[in-house]
Length: 338
Length: 235
Ligand SMILES: [Zn+2]
Image 1 (cartoon, chains in turn cyan, blue):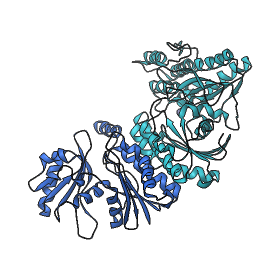
Image 2 (cartoon, chains in turn red, orange; image 1 turned 30 degrees about the vertical axis):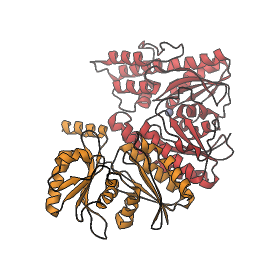
Image 3 (cartoon, chains in turn brown, blue; image 1 turned 120 degrees about the vertical axis):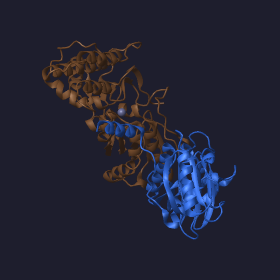
Image 4 (cartoon, helix red, strand yellow; image 1 turned 120 degrees about the horizontal axis):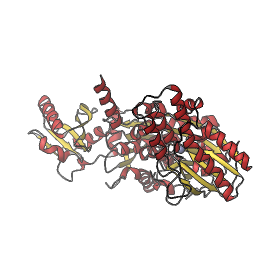
């Protein structure tokens, strides 16, 4: 663990974020969301995201330091998301953080964004310690990890096509709900019957624990194509579709914990805010006698505090060795802790 | 005053360390792919070789483009990150104007100066300036992304209006050459005028032409172009 406050920076997608983390304590966490900016395009536009990060991230860093009451000379390290993500967006954060650390003579920690999502549950007040099984589901990722050591989560399964949040957004669009549509879909689903439509469940192909959402999405497309379903039917479609996306997530999370004999499960990513997913996980985990750890919504969606958390389990690169560090758009083949 | 200047808008990024009026050290990164992303390695080399610690810097000057979007952003992010951590001043300089200062050094007096860099898609990032003795460069054509033929036509107009020759340089100048009017030429191959020198960024700022450290893209994101086109088609 790093013996002092860490400034963490995250710009991998459409949130410009900075935080100050000390051990398990989040001393500040600031997120400037660009969601509204991308809404007119119906999805995140990489060039628009990169342009917005630049010009925002410095103010976000200032705000994070100020709210934490920490001055730059009291920092112990600077952490930044190195991968995976939109390369233009990542480069703004990496270039900013690298220059900041260089100018202050601070060591750096390069963090995998997914490692951050997994480590978020370790932060206070949830303060979950290994071993546990983690489910990270968002608009960009869907993965299940066995965490015996926070330095080296073991991937159990991931999506082979869309991410869960992406599937929910696409479903929302098919039902005429706009972008980003996950939360709107959830609201529409509240009044619907989730057993009305038997959509295929999102089970994966090759890997036993992999997920696939393409089939569910296609089924919804066929169900609405060329028709204009009324309000009640749309609510049923939304409820049934949401169920087909989130139920396999909850089932596999709990099944994996039982299989590996760990006492707890954790949720992360923006889809962790989905009420139906939370209910299903809570029910099944309770039946199986497992602890359920779900960080606050602000620590589930993209943020920099989680990057500061993962940094505690990564090696520090001393000044000035990190000057050669670069961002990478792809996932690390060696795993999120590598 | 110790100034650290950097420009990553071109394929061969340039860095300079200036104390008062004295250029203490300069460094150019090779024009290999993603050269701009190595800017911090270059900066460290510059500080180490010159013996000037980064903490001595009290002003950062950065080229704001136009140029490859990612390169421009890496340079500005680096400049802003350094200045934020050091608590020092940060100022932008238009990269095309700095390039024009390099061209002025080899151009006949009064010539129209045309920096032109490759903007892909059959276009150049270009601008035009005129040297005014003892003053900041006068901008004749604001930085833009423009087809070589169109730029050639603009240069012809500017030469006629100024009754002066023109000199173009930069990694896009060769594409412009066939479209230049009589009296206009491209700097000879190997001329230093083809490479933007970070020292000239500082000259732009010191001459009073400093700009905010924000990118000059000269081009909308493709998604925005498409969205506007769709809106136009709908009305
Ligand atoms: Zn994420």
